[in-house]
Amino acid sequence: MTEFRFPEGFVWGAATAAYQIEGAATEDGRGPSIWDTFSRTPGKVFQGHTGDVACDHYHRYAADVAMMADLGLKAYRFSVAWPRIRPDGTGPVNPRGLDFYDRLTDCLLQHGIDPIVTLYHWDLPQTLQDTGGWTDRETAEHFADYAVAVHGRLGDRIRTWTTLNEPWCSAYLGYGNGVHAPGEQDAGAAFRAVHHLLLGHGLAARALRAAGAEVVGITLNPADVRPADPDSAADADAVRLVDGLHNRIFLDPLTGAGYPEDVLEHVSRLVEPDFIRDGDEKVIAAPIDLLGINFYSPTYVAGRPGGAGASAYPGTEGSVEFLPPTGPLTDMGWMIEPAALTRLLERIGRDYPGLPLIITENGGAFPDKTATEGPDDTGWVADTDRVAYLDGHLRAAHEAIARGVDLRGYLVWSLLDNFEWAEGYRKRFGIVHVDYLTQRRTPKESARWYQEVIARNGL
Ligand code: GBH
Image (cartoon, rainbow, N blue to C red; front, side):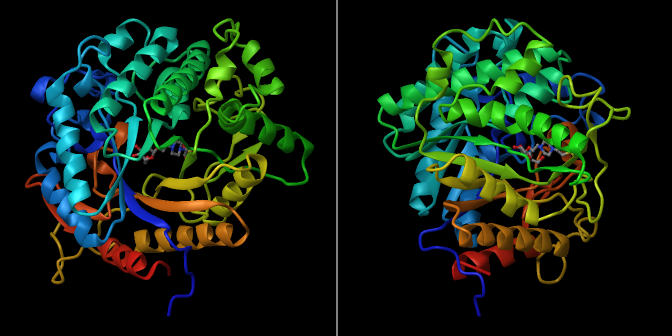
């Protein structure tokens, strides 16, 4: 019996990102990205892992797509590697780079899988970083040019175009606390990056629309920010600050309200916001048809000076403590609280009405219990924890829909175990196991479970 049925036409799929799965880092004219540089910098990525080979998806895409079809996926979200298309970030287009995504797109369509494109999932061409990366205004314009180049080749077959993946991470982790590429640690740089990422999104969204793109969107990783003590006024202030720096700083300008006053005031205490020019907010407010939401874990804060450990939020050190996660955790150490997803979806639906939502990422890292011995007799890898995580979050998503949220689909992170950024290959998010020595793929129990969920359109 299907207890939790999803709406007719609900989009079921899986997501990946170029640098995390493709490999083939120097093939067919691909230029270096900031992640090639970062992963080669000692001490940045677990055991010096790189995306040089990753899941070798660049060569194995056809078999991977056949596997997706076997699992019954209706949609597949992948990202295009900017340095494959424009190896120098700007300048001439590299047709062999476009050829790969052309083949991938055709293969998906032949299997009846709807492609959902992400144009930027963190792999900035290194040459653009050399001139300042996202702290440089021109990067925004180069991004829009690149978006148009990709659309020019694939626009006749791809309906859904999203610009950025999680600009919060690009800005705060890339330029603020330096945990991600390019590894800068500068509050001012982080906010410049926020603005130029949003500007790049707006310019690209406008250009994609003009070029005839049917559905244009962006993916954020909005946070469900909760107070340690619901009765504490200081905690409520901390929630407002973190919510501003995480959610409203992106969502308000994207939906036409401009930057929130309290956020601008906070930013101004750390950097002169002269990088925000007249007219920028209008560009950023380019209409979008879809908001992608990546969700993993809630955020609990208290209004008191934080402990050691650099906060990812510039300027919160003296006033906000981020509580250590409690209760069941994933292998990333992230708290598992599905109700947080319901709260978050409801909040976005309420505060930013009229915007169709899609969960572009949700999933968990869990160690594969049988990974060391290889798959069990049934050929599956037991990942009961992941099934429980996904089941809980799908129920939470269903609850949000029942409460009136316009949620159109769900894409699991991730199809494959892959290069988990600063954690390298040691953290596994896949519903399909990857043996990195042989590149053998083995669907885990969660993949078989998900296959049934899709077939029944519910739980
Ligand atoms: C996504 O980022 C990425 O889009 C994807 O490429 C990646 O593989 C996937 O998630 C898994 O990491 O530090 O305990 O406060 C998610 C990044 C995860 C960043 C949650 C902020 C806060 C948790 N976000 N994290 S904690």
